[in-house]
Length: 388
Image 1 (tube, rainbow, N blue to C red):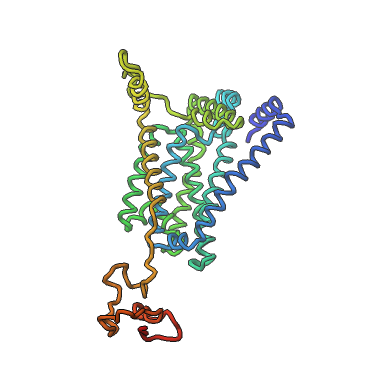
Image 2 (cartoon, rainbow, N blue to C red):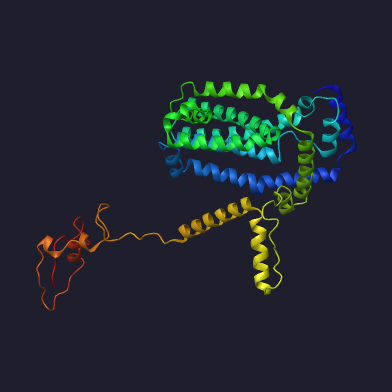
């Protein structure tokens, strides 16, 4: 960071000093988010990893392929995210002052890019480290494999941070690149032999239990090449993009600080562009039909949000139906796990040489009922039928 940038930041901090009450509220807000959001999610994730079902899922044959697909999805998502909110973001006034000066943007905005990159690297390292630690604690992987996968997570996070910046610097190319990554990632998932030819495939090959080889080395080389492109990408970010993202981020953080999360999310909702010529309010129609047409036209003007909401509603309905479905009841009279709950599996009296007819006054004791089980009897004192 050069001297002019340090002076500008010092002047900005001196003008916008927070009061003790504001600092106390920021500490309170961070503590509440940690206790109510971060800690429960982290605990639930760890318990899911070390559970028997979680270990069985993490040690399945498809774990490496799923890892490569997840990495490809994360990289594509970071490109799309950079179009709305990239890592090179400062406060709005400071952004305008630095971006319109003679200071190179690679110097003026290097600080927020580094801080955002470190945050992404810590997040991916924590995720991969938790998976590696769970596998090591279960005895499904050795310590070296767990550490290697944690390092792989850090390298993946580095590439993710640079792709995030790329989405901010090249918003149009980001969409095409993200679509290509998702397509090739799906191909790698379907054709495992192509994993060794793609960077996300290298991340999958570094999974504990997979054939590591030179996957981590190749992935590290790609991350170094991406890091070398960072100053050029920062200089490519346009002034209009910097100011627009800084303005929207200031509005979103202001709403979030006031705990108005819905207003904070609405800042990043895309403006309607489709169906602007459609009439939302019919001229002569009943009032219920007017409201229905208005909502339908409004939803059709944001097709992406409509598709995402419909998909989420269908998936939520499916989850609720599966969760509320009654579990199949096991038959208490099944003598062995191999038997099925069907009348054909019940041993017949003929199989145990029992009499076909009973005396009129006879009664079947508990020991006699033991002949309906081929293993043990109901009474330890008698294992033969007794007819009274």
